[in-house]
Image (cartoon, rainbow, N blue to C red):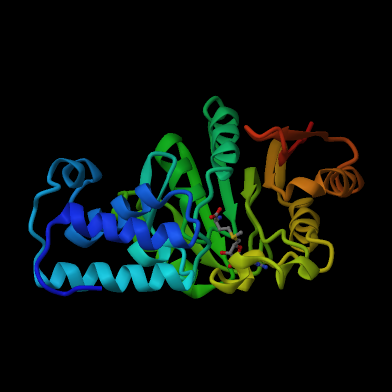
Length: 283
Ligand SMILES: C[S@@+](CC[C@H](N)C(=O)[O-])C[C@H]1O[C@@H](n2cnc3c(N)ncnc32)[C@H](O)[C@@H]1O
């Protein structure tokens, strides 16, 4: 690609052409996001300034972004952030990229938590902190814990909490709920749920942390372990919300029935009609 000064529109056109060769269906939006980040402007600004003449260093940054993108690096890891539930979160290769499906779990958690006071909540496997931070921001009365086994992920989550001024979240490095003595009213978790045999074939497995994806031979190992631990750590009337892989609704429900025979269990579908969240309501 050229390195002499050129106009933004021409450069974006060139990026789009290169992306189109890779059959990127979002070439237009991808080129906008890359340009906005390289120039530290909004997408609207980029659209309105097509005749802006790019500086040398801006061309270099954009070329560097494009090379990474064409190598397959996910966009959020290139620009270092991603949107979730109306906020922008820092992301690094140490954390899972926030997925829109997880907003369903957050909506359910807010609906449960808003009328319950006092309320103690834990986000198990917090990653970048998106669930804990979204809940702390919406449920001012809640005591919020966020745990992860990965210290690198916790460092990212703490930065995000501080950026969004959610300084009352208590971060704990732990293997699920093992060190906790508290009684929780609400447990939320988006734990690794890809069955190990599927991992090798998944493109995401090349970039996102295995610890965030691999759910063991059945995909339900971490979820089952969490539910066993949760048995002695839930207040009466508590709620557990777990994101699941869409094909695992039935076995997830069976595990929940076995561990909490007196609770009400429900599978909640996402916008695509797929089983996405397992909800367990204790009596
Ligand atoms: C699927 S990612 C979800 C991250 C974040 N909650 C989200 O929704 O984007 C799962 C997270 O669980 C963490 N994790 C995996 N096994 C764990 C364990 N045994 N105890 C605590 N955290 C664990 C991983 O490090 C990872 O950050």
